[in-house]
Image 1 (cartoon, one colour):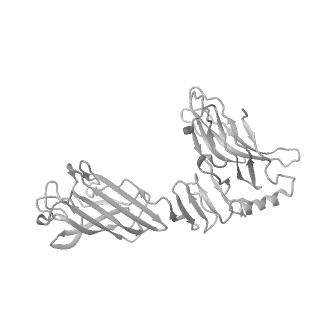
Image 2 (cartoon, one colour; image 1 turned 180 degrees about the horizontal axis):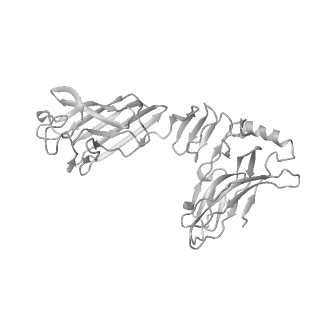
Image 3 (cartoon, helix red, strand yellow; image 1 turned 90 degrees about the horizontal axis):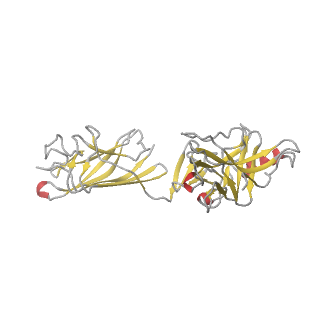
Length: 380
């Protein structure tokens, strides 16, 4: 099997059809247009979208019959080249690419790249290839450098020590996608790669979200993923310890972000026994990665303490304060059925002092049952 598979010649190679002018045409058709400062395609170079997951264009997959090789799916890509604008590379047929034998002691990381070579001389090389850049075996291997190569990275291949085959788990898809200017870019391995200009759209295949580039950040415009979950907890303000919800207790916390609006719903259910909270006000937090702006906001909350009206048990409706410049959310409830003034939810003011919490439960603690929080806040 070959160690390099060659595709069609790149479009508009040197000494053919005024190459730089023609590649400027590519910049208009692909990759977000021409960037006048470096004189190259903008950062939108990458694989032309098509198909899904690793089976899409120029995806790299393991062989059906395991071996030291991988299969490269046919496809096209746009490769930005400094001073030359960019090239379209085409692999017309799905091909097999050899991986060098494994080191017997240490693993290594190889990169599968799409590479263009265009010599300025009539007799020089003019090729588009998909090939392997071999890494160095090491106890803690790193990816090999592709500096000096006009290429885009398609996949990282982890070659385990003593391996005789490449498994699907050894492949990490590293493709980035390109698109025509004004089109929606598929975002797959992009992280937060900026848009070309304000008003650009991307669809995040991982998060299933459509976002618009404001000029400085991506703002979610719509989500097909629905609600997202996170591991929320109730904590005691005194020492930051987690409230024990008892045997069988549970937490269900979800959120959804559209633009700058975050919708939250949280449900904490106490179990059958083993409750405990350190002294201090009780609080929870926004999902990781989110912080409220400079003005505090409020959402709704409710607390159900099992029992009946005779001992102040039952349902309490309150409000939760989302603190400014903070992730903290502090539920607040009436002091008792006879006192509508609201203050911070407190299971007890001192260890063992039943009836001193908020709401006040004579002879007991305001715990058990469930605590719910829900509402919408504006993100900064």
